[in-house]
Length: 313
Image (tube, rainbow, N blue to C red; front, side):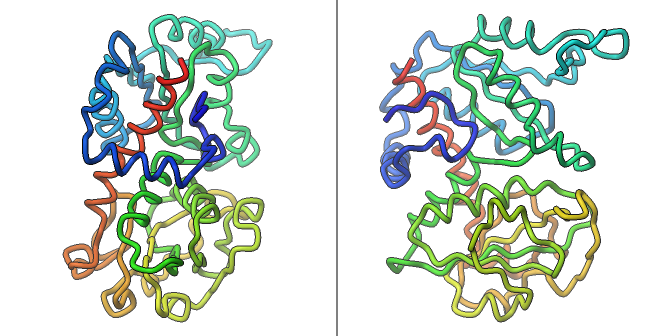
C-alpha cells in the first residue's frame, strides 16, 4: 500500500487490509525491526500527551527506528503567517523550522490542539498543514485541531477484534465534562466508522451537533437511552460546542455513562477519562470495558502506519 503520510484517515487506501495487517503485527511486533534501521522519527509536541507519546515511540522502536522527541513549547515560538514582520514573540518561522527538522528526520509526527476560540483558524489546521507544506519528509498526525486519525485507527482495530456480528451497532455518546474539549476524537471516530461495516449513530444533547460536513447522513439522537438500545459498542466522549464554537453550554450529569444504560455493550473511551463524571466506576472497572485493550492498540495503529510509510521511503 502506498502511504505517503498519515494526517487524516483519508490517507488509508484499504482500511480492511490495514486493520488485518495491524492485528498480525500485534502477534509479532518485532518482525520488521530491520525496516526502521538507521531511520529516525522526530516527534513534535505542541501539547501534552501520555498514550500517544508512549505508544508512537514504542511503535517506532518495534520497527527499529531511532526516536527524538521535542516539546516545541520548550523551544522557540514558531511563526506560521507569511509576510509577517517578526517583531513580536515569535523567533523562528515554520518555513525554516520544518526544513531543518526534515534534515534530522525520516518521518515527523506532530501533535497540536485547537484554540477552540477561532473556528476558521482551527479548521485551516494551520500547524499540521504548515508542516505538510514545508517539510520534505512524511508527516504523521498525533492529534490536530480537528482530527485524531491514530486514535480512530486503534478504535477500528479494537472493534474488528471484538465484534461478534457481521454488522455491529456502534453508538458515539456525548458525556459531560467541566472543560472545553476538542471535537477531534469524535470527528475521526465518526469518519472511521463511516468507512466500516457498522450501524453507526450519534447521541448528544440538542445543540451539540458536530460538523455536518463530517457527520453527513449519520443518524443523530437526542434521547440517549433510546440511542443505546441493543448497542454492541458504546464510545463515550465529550466535545465542546461546534456551532457556538468551543463553548460548554451543557453540563447535564444525566448523560454520564452508567452500567444500566450500557447494558451488554462494550464500553470504549480514548482516555484519559474522568471517573464518575463521564462514566461511573462500575462501567470502567466492569468486564464490558475495553479501554485498556483500546489503549494497547494505539501502539499497533501507529506501528502499521509507520511501517507503510517506511516501505515507501
